[in-house]
Structures are given as structure tokens and as C-alpha cells.
Image 1 (cartoon, rainbow, N blue to C red):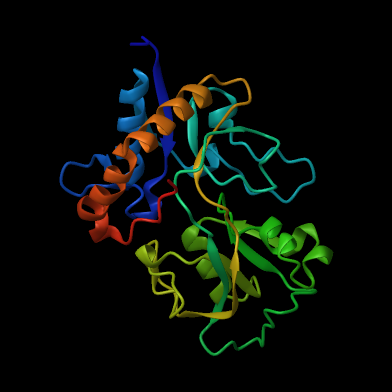
Image 2: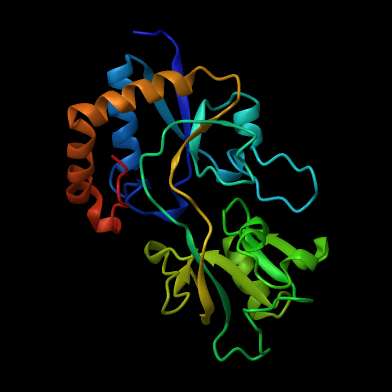
Length: 264
């Protein structure tokens, strides 16, 4: 057993089956916590999770040259965090194998009735709001070749925390919000529902846009964690323990929403 303790960042804001804070004992639970326990046990490592804002892991930035890796990872406060290996982060971290399939389906949201006649097929000249640290960001729109994205100026890309995003949209500070569809938080294809405890009065508009390509753990380029994590994860997959863990997660955490498809 390695004497060192490896720390992994979690942000339970999604309150979903992947990870959440239990209302009774206040512990962080979920599929990722279960997976981390099994991987670390297989590798003979000591591991803990720490709750911190996700921007300590990944940063949605608008300035050219902005480092997408959060200061928590760069400063070695954490050894790893869950990421998706998109183009915005591909050259900035080392990555484990993928273990869950997720496409990060996202949509634009506007006030009910679309009072400002926002056109989701051409955002030229519009001001778009995003949530800090989420993969539903300008990079996603650009990679999906949405008309008008390439001409967006810095001041037209506004980043907010959850509640601030909705209030700024309702007050017409921004023309539309672009966010991940998260049914666990009430953000789905039907309406924006409740997010952060604030009634939004918003509705989706336009087609679904995919912003993610699976989930894995990301780390600093010089981290030794990726090698032993991958070795242990591959053993779990070969032995069938990973498949068993995925099935068990449906029972243990399914009340928080569906457990995303595992990658075997």
C-alpha cells in the first residue's frame, strides 16, 4: 500500500447519480465515489474526495490563451477530477481511460414565449450567457459550427454562477442562456424548472447540441495517478467487477436520476 493519499475533486451541485451529498449523513456518494473506491482498492492506493467548485478543475474562459485547467489541479491541491477530453482541454492534462458515455446535450434557453425573438440558428450580434466551469461553453458552439459563434466578441460571452445566469436572462442582460440539459436539476427539454432554488420561467429553443465526449479523470501532465488508475480500471473491466459496479449503481443511486451508460 502506497502511504500517499490521493485527492479527487467533486462538485455535488448536480445532485445526480454520478455524485451527490446525502441529506442524512452529509457524505458525498454516487457512482464516481463507488468507482474510485474500487479503483483505489485494486491499485493499493489511499484516496479521498474533496468538495470544491468545479472551476478548481476546469475553467470556461473567453480570453485567448486562458488555461482551461483549474488552479486546484495546477497547484496540486487535487490529483484528479472528472473531465471530458474536449479540444479545449486535450493538450492541457493527462487523462485516464473513459468509463462513462455522456454527450453533454445542451440547449439555448430564453424567457417563456421568446419575447426578444432570439434565433438559435444564428447568434450573430447576440450576447450569450454560460455557467462558469460547464462544458456548454463558446468552444462547444464553435466546434458545432453554429452560425455567428465565430464573430462573437469577448463582451458578448458572459459567464455567471447558476442563479445569476437566470436572473440576467430574465432581465434581458443577455439574449439567451446556453446550458447542459440536467433533469436532476430541472433543466430539461420541457422547461428550465428549478435550478439553484430559483424559479426560472424559461423555455428551451433550438436543437440539442452535444458538448461532451465521454467522462474520464484528468490530472496534471506530470501526475503518476493516470498510470495506476488506468491499470486498476482495466483489471476491473476484465474481471467483470466494473460491470457489477455499474449495475449496483442503478440500485444504490438510481433515485437521483439514471446512471449514465458505462464504457466497458
